[in-house]
Amino acid sequence: MRYLLMIVEPRGAREARSEDEGRALYAEMVEFGQRLAARGQLIASESLRPDSHGVRVQQRGETPSLVDGPFAEAREMVGGFYLVECAGRDAALTIAQDCPAARFATVEVRECAPCYVQ
Image (cartoon, rainbow, N blue to C red; front, side, top):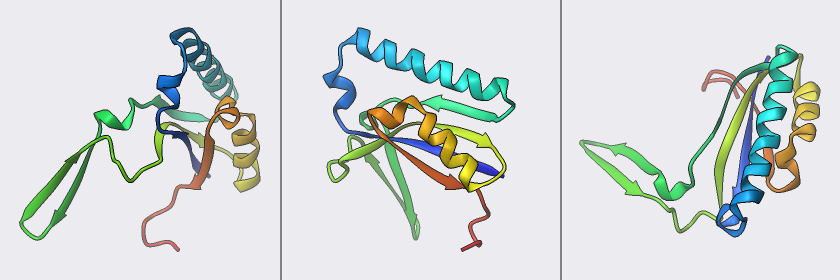
């Protein structure tokens, strides 16, 4: 089964770290991904730029709406993800608990499924 592990960070947390601290955390995350890959569990992973570089797109009727970030109503942002293949929810939760980001952010675990599955 495929699961998405979303790294949900408090907005502004990256800016509060020194570059050295940020590089050290990033290196831990890369190494975590390498361990998942070595076990054949990693499908994809990426770190994302802060939401100040994002754009929200909505299409209601004929007129699209584009809203540039940062998104004032959001207190958190998705900072990255791991897409993993594992036996089930318990295995995905174990992976999430081992993720270094669980120490400084929230790791949200979501099973991948078609949008019509409840």
